[in-house]
Amino acid sequence: MIRPPGQDYISSVRIRRRVRELGRSIRRFYKNRPLTVVALLKGSVFFVVDLLRHLEPSTEVEFWTVSSYRGTRSTGRLHGLKSCRGNFRGRDVLLIDDILDSGLTLAHTRSHAKRLGARQVEVCVLLNKKRKRVRTVSARWVGFHITDRFVIGYGLDMDQRYRALPSIRALPEGV
Ligand code: IMP
Ligand code: MG
Image (cartoon, rainbow, N blue to C red; front, top):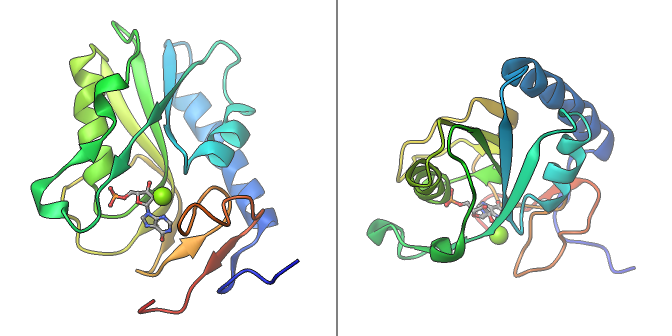
């Protein structure tokens, strides 16, 4: 196998342990309230599946495929929202994403879920990048806080590659 770029950052063991903690906390928070988990694809695919194993079996799941145009952040454009659906009336929605970066993706999907009738929308991300946000978004659950550098693995890609790495690797700062 060709060695993937970057260096070890968060091991699969640490991820597994943290996902279990998050799952338990989420389960306690929602107790008997009807919950729909909305996973933002593709980045959150491994995270959401591992997390769901720790949630109430009656939890409903939707998958939304969206992408943000980096470089046009100021215009606040998010692609794919129009085809994102869900029957949320009277339900709590938990948005799941791989990483909170500029905040654009989660700000727009959060508003969209509210428009679709969600009673309350919370956010859970595996990673929270410490940087200046374009949009303010607060995540109730965060797996790990990281510095502003590019990471790959466990769903996170670099030009669609390296999502399948079981752990998270970091590229040197400034790449
Ligand atoms: P935001 O809209 O700027 O918050 O970006 C969120 C999306 O950008 C994430 O769902 C990722 O797909 C992507 N992204 C941001 N930072 C990274 C990174 O370090 N590695 C891989 N993808 C990233
Ligand atoms: Mg991506």
